[in-house]
Image 1: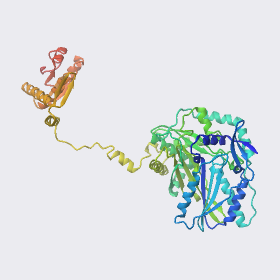
Image 2: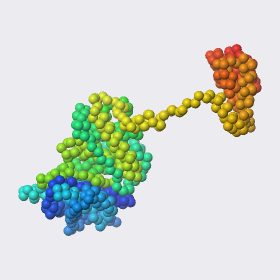
Image 3: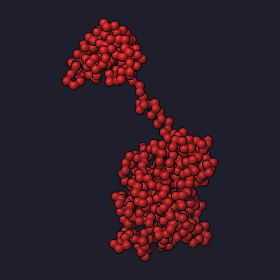
Image 4: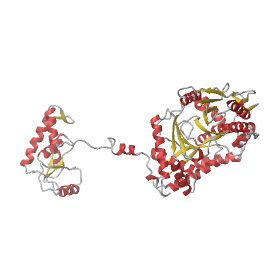
Length: 577
């Protein structure tokens, strides 16, 4: 059996061909199972579920006539290997190292393997069931469907009850429906929506780099406690929205403040599954569509939350239209095929029972991250949220990613503690206390300098003593050394004092920019007076106002100034010298 690729698969195929490190397209996770297991029975359950999942039995090839296609491989198996780490000095560390090593393995689409699984035994009652699959085959939701089916088969066998038939959808039917959508009115309507909603030229992120993903992403994980999450949910309900909309609101606000912009664009991860059959087929359909928000310092929490919720709802209505096509249609120069930071909210519990033993899904990678991905998981029993950042290491250092993660948690906490939806978003702080202190109180913004009690004249005298023959003033062909400057200033100061200038008098300076101007200013200061610059190009009325208002006792000018101006300055009672 030979089948064409879906629209989503074609994009991953293209990404695989263009990337240098094909391991970045691996989806990796593990189920942490607490309790003793019947390992042979689990191996049989995995074998049965894999046999039902049609996508795991195809390889991919490029055809000159039809382009990329998937070819059924009869008899293909993916046995569940058991790796015993119980005798290791660090079983969990060894398990993590082994999984990361496998996750970074390059993949050949034609020869595979595109899927691998292993059961890692850390203790008699603790196991990691590891799964790794290429994104071309399955997305994260598809892996969960597979894990769910294995848990059903295993639990039925342990309990000795009849197994329900598989609900996996048919791969050929799924591909046919995908092709039908590409030629439907729904497709054209979705395209029209995205073209009308998002017509802007550039997408920016907090990163200053545009480097492509190379290697596994940096992962930062943290918790939003149950009490804070409860308050966040209550605040969302008070605004008439669900809590995922408030998470998106917080991220939009954080990006706006971090980049100092009122227009924010981010990616929103959607399943791309709109019907029962598509929601039951373990295949890659996930999509990233843009979420554009506009906000100002006066925007309130209530306004942004409701706008965000509405935009998210509209996006879900058009989620089957590929994000890659949106970028191409709009001619957006995005961050290597994405919309900047992208948000992936998983609002349901990924916990599964294997018999009487609970298991929790832990993600290792959900595929390539070109910039930074924000992943939000609902903890078991609604006990808070797990918030993970995956960052492209070519764009962010580990410290930068950790700082962004910590600040985002702070923003979420502030929204949860908001007493009213009327809170202006300008009141939300992004920087933490240490960062604010660094900016406001540290050397970054400190204007403190040790004060010197010397006057300008003292500093000039010191410089004369240190470097008497060094050039002090240069104007055209005229140059004075520090000693010459000081000598001339002293001479003119004596002339001023002899002419009646006293301490605290104001003396006008009507001299063009020149060596004479510098000498005149120093001479006035040495006489104990203050100097007032006067521009002889000013209108006479303006000069008269300056002279009268300042109360100058006399005005120092040059021969050129004497010829350019009147014998007596307008309004001046002092003589021109």
